[in-house]
Structure formats: structure tokens, C-alpha cells
Image (tube, rainbow, N blue to C red):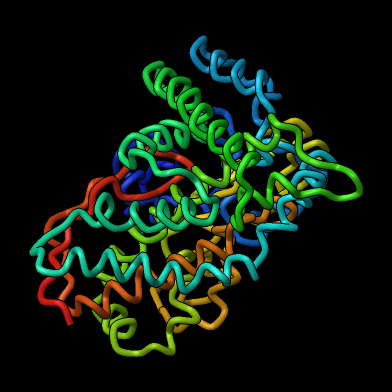
Amino acid sequence: MTDIRTAPSWNPFDPGFLVDPYPTYARLRDEDPVHRAPIGTLIVSRYDDVHSVLRDTETSVRRFETNVEESAHMQALRQRSLERAPSILGLDPPDHTRLRGLVQRTFTPRAVGRMRDQTTAIVDDLLDALSGRDEIDLIGEYAFVIPFSVIHAMLGLPETDVSMVRSWSHALTQTLEPFLTPEQVDAALEGGDLMDAYLMDAIAKKRREPADDLLTKLIEAEEEDDRMTEEELLSMVSLLFVAGHETTVNLIGNGIHALLEHPDQLALVRDDESVDATVTDELLRWDSPVQTSGRRLLHDTVISGVQVAADEMVLTALGSANRDPGFWGDTADRLDVTRTDAARHVSFGSGVHHCLGAALARMEGEIAITRLVRRFPDLSLASEPTFNARIILRGRSTLPVGLGAAA
């Protein structure tokens, strides 16, 4: 019988793709690894190609500097980005190198390590509060609360309405997406203004009353008489605050959902503390919170035998690379929390833009996930989750779980 399947296509507007993109990724890797999507962007899906593009120094992350035609509401978003200091997510070297260097002097693995006991206390207090409940929404009542509380404590930010700041943060993370509705842009612009006001007040107070926290260290960060400008400081703090909890929400939610769908792996995490060293990276590999990362090529190149011209926008499919049998072997599609090389995933990117908060995310994910399943050994899926409809960030909007009796 003739195979009449249509050619594989990366269609982020397909609801089925948003729920489970991995079958599409598998076909793209096999049949069209340098895929021209209907929207015009090139999608690169194999691990070696993704890794190569991310580490290519002759690329740019300046997504607005392309020939892609923009709608009027996206132009408004672009205008706002031009009126303020850009995030390091949208900067190329040498500007990126300068700002990242200033932040790295304070946001170190040692600083993250000092937060471990405080993170454990935050998690345990929350688990105590949840004990006795039959069912919770894991996203809103657990996965969001932990990273928000941790980054809030690290920065030393003043107390505020958590739900209000969460709405601002949610609106702002939408701006990472390549396609937004006019309503999403309006919400992002409003949320951005409100978040800026909140953080500017916090910065002003910290200048008057320095403390032993990350925000004070960022204000004081200096290298060879170079400091961040006030606008750069605001942009950096906003990035750390928003990105510092939003993606970790998805790490915890995606990770717990994956374990609930793989009872043998859930049992391993529950009963064997030796997997603590590998579980978070394997969950990041299995279902990455960040699915794609874009680069604009600054030179002609060849990817998997395909000639690609300078100025092309290339979207690296991180989620696909993380399950590429060409790199991971025959077990690429198997969840294995004991996988010793899981940390080679590209969920944190690679090259100069490797995620600044990788150590923090790993620490939070490990503590939040392992302590939850050990406190509630009968944890179960209460009903099907809902997914956020995003192209770059992948996560569950709701994840109803039954807790069972606490251990």
C-alpha cells in the first residue's frame, strides 16, 4: 500500500502539537531536519544541529531586526523594547558580555547554594500547609509559589500581592513568543509598566537601606569602574524576577506530570534518594520548559547538508534535540531518572546565552519535586491537565492532583 502521509510540518497553532509536540519532532528529525515552516522560519530539530547553531558566534538574538513583516500591535511591543534598556536575552556581544559579567559576579553557584536551606524551608512549610487537603492544583498552589518565594527572598524584594505580581509576570513572559494577539500585547504593556514601578520602588529603597541580598549586590556590582545604568539594572532585575520563577513553574509542573505518567520512575524518586543527582536534568530533558530558541544568522552556512543564507531566522527545537536518538541512542524516548548524562540536554540553551539561572532552577526543581513525592507517596493525577498555548515556553496551566495521606 502506498504511504499517503503528508509531509511533516511544524505548526504551533495546532492544538494537538501544543499538547504533545514530540511525534512531530520525531518526523522532522527523520524526514526534514532543516524544515521551512509555513510561517517562513527555519526549524532545526537534530541535537548536533541545534547545539551547533546555539554555539555559533556569528548569530544574533535580536529578533526584531529581521525582514519579517510585523502587525501593528507587534510594532507597539517593539517600540516599547526600543524605549528601555534591553534584557540580556536580546543582546549580542559585546553588550551581552559586559552585562552578563557584572551579574555573574553576584549570581554565582555559591550564592545559589546558600539558598538551599531556605528553599527547603519554603518547600516544607508549603507542604505542611497542604497536608490534609485531598486535591490541589499543582501549578497555582505549589509550582508557582516555590520559585516565586525563592527569587523574592534572594532579591530581597518587599512584600506584595502575589496574585497581582503573578498576573504581571504571566503577561510579560508572553512577550517571549513570536506571535501575540492585540489583547496579549496590551496586557504585556500594562503589566510591564506596573512591574517596572514595583521594581523601581524596590531598587530605590535598597539604595537607601542596603542589605545582604542579591538586589543590593546587583546595585553594587562593579568591574573596572563599570556599573549597570539605572535602566540596565531595572531590566536585569525584571528578567531575574520574571524568568527566575516563570520557567521553573513549568519545570516543576512538567516534571511532576511526567512522573505521574511513569509510575516506575515515580517510585524510584519516592524511594531512592540516590536519584536526586540526576532526576531534575532528566525531567528537563524529557519535557523542556523552553522548547525553542531563535537565532538570526549573520553568515551563510550549511546545516545538515542544507544551504542556509545569512539573515535567516533559525528556530532551534530544544525539545526535539533532547529526544534525538542520533545523540541519546535507543533510549531517547524513555524517561529514566537515573540517566547519568542527562545534564547534556539543551533545555538551558548553550553557548554565550546559556541560562544564567540554570543552577538555581536545578536546585529548586530537585527540592520541590523530590520532597513533594516523598511527603505524599500516594500522589496521583486527579484529572487531565490543561496546557498553556505557547510556542517557546511549554507548561501546564492547571494540573489537578490528589495528595493522599502525608507520610
